[in-house]
Amino acid sequence: QVQLMESGGGLVQPGGSLRLSCRASGGFFSFPAMGWYRQAPGKERELVASISRSDVVNYADSVKGRFTISRGNRGNARNTVYLQMNSLKSEDTAVYYCTIQGSGSWGQGTQVTVSS
Image (cartoon, rainbow, N blue to C red; front, side):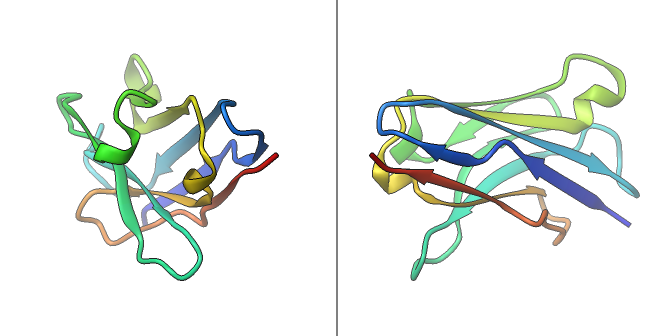
C-alpha cells in the first residue's frame, strides 16, 4: 500500500520561502513520477509541479520561476520529493498534497498560508 507523508507547511509572510517534503513508501516501482498539487478554499485541486522518473520537471505557469521541485540524490532518498517555494504570494495559500502520478494515492496534505 502506497503511503505519502508531507511536511514543511506553515505560515509565512508574502515574499518569504518554505520547503515542503514528501516521502513515499509502500508498493510502487522505485523512483516513480511524482507531483505536488494544491487546493485553495472553494477551488479545485490543481497541479503545481511534477517530476518524472528521469527527473524531467514541469510547473504550472503561476509558479514558474518561483517554485522548484526536486528529489533526493540516491537510493531510497529518491523516493522523497521536495518543493522549494520562494517569493510566496497570498494566492499561493492552499493545502498542498503530493502524489505518485497515476497511483490515485495522496498524502494527508500540508497547509501553506501566506499572509502578513
